[in-house]
Length: 264
Image (cartoon, rainbow, N blue to C red; front, side):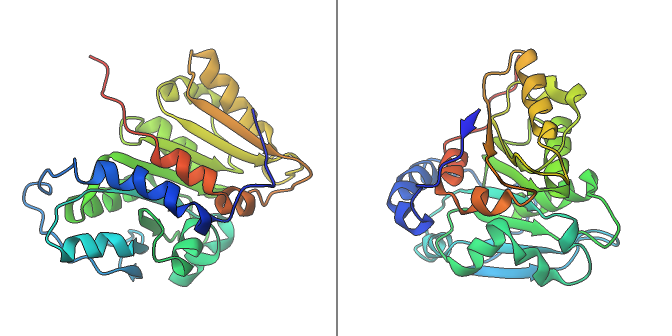
């Protein structure tokens, strides 16, 4: 279990640490976009996107300033993709609510946030549907310069539950998972044995009790997994997402993970 830290520097102070991690793999990944997919111009910033199909999810799409600049220079580079799943409180029809917490909130104020970021909006009274989420990721990865070996998934509360569930259902899709204040099904722990996971939870959470993260960590390790970690914030309730997503350590850790080749 990784102890919580109150002494981590602000995100803006670690950009000099992030940039070498991001840029080194970018210029090594120059494969063309998926066959038949029409690339789209990269415009820096975060903008709402419509649902792909009827009853699909609209989403916020963020493009880092540096990604647009690289394209303007005529260079072919691949970027890490981060998918963020919000919690129950942001469900509805207002796409701006997606930016209330976590990575899209940070990206809205930091044009150098070092990921292409996709943040879908879940309708009221619904739960996350993996097929609809897959459709968004496939669409974005086919049309934007996404590094397929650096696709990361994170979410808070209801989105944390879905992070565990989606990651276990499709472990070969993701380079790493970061469920925050989420609960998984320990019966799926063996599916995540080779996937780096960093779970984060408040020790006084009475909405999703921290056992939801403890049980998953135990299940993964019982199957022989050595790539999971767990941070429990002391004297903190359900809102583990503020310290989790405000910490540069989480993003540094994500950027260091790459999807492992499938076992032969």
